[in-house]
Image (cartoon, rainbow, N blue to C red; front, side):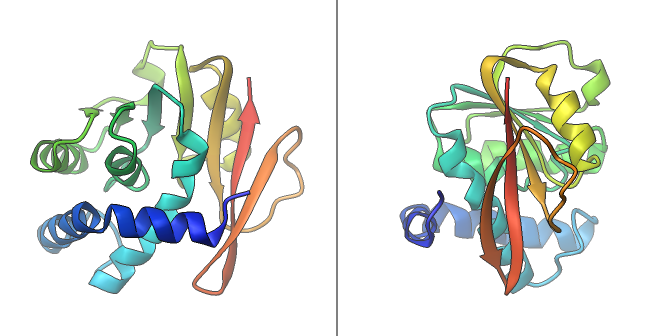
Length: 186
C-alpha cells in the first residue's frame, strides 16, 4: 500500500527538482499545448498524481513510459529514481522536444524517443507504464508484450472499473477524487 506519508516524503525530498520541472513545464505550456494544466496549482496536481507510481517502480532498472505527453508520470519518476533508466515514447514532436529539453536541463536518466508503441521493438523492460493513453484494459494487455517475465505493467485508473481481472489496485485520493494505480504482473 502506498501511504500518504511515503508520498509526502518523496515530495519533500525531491522538492527542488520538482519545482524546476514545474517551472519549465509552465513556461513551455504557455507557448505550446503540452497539457490542459495551465496554472502552477494544476501542474502541481499532475505531479502529486504522478508521484504515486514511484514506490511501485522502486527496484526497476529499466522502465518504459508510453504516450509520455508532457512528462507525467515519467519525468517525476526519473527525478525520484535517478538510478533507474527510463525510455519515453512520445510521437508528437513538440511534446517529444519538451521531454528532451527537460531531460537535459534536469539531468535525468531518460531517453525520449519520437515513436509509437507499435514501432518499439524492445520487449524486456522491468516495468511499463502509461497514463491516459489507451483504454486501461487495452494498455494492460499491450504493455505485457514489452515487459520481461516477472515484470509489471502499470496503468492509471480515474474511475473504478470492475472489468479488470488479475490486477492489483493501489487506491489513493487526489483532490477529493478516488484514483488508483492498476498493476498486472507478467
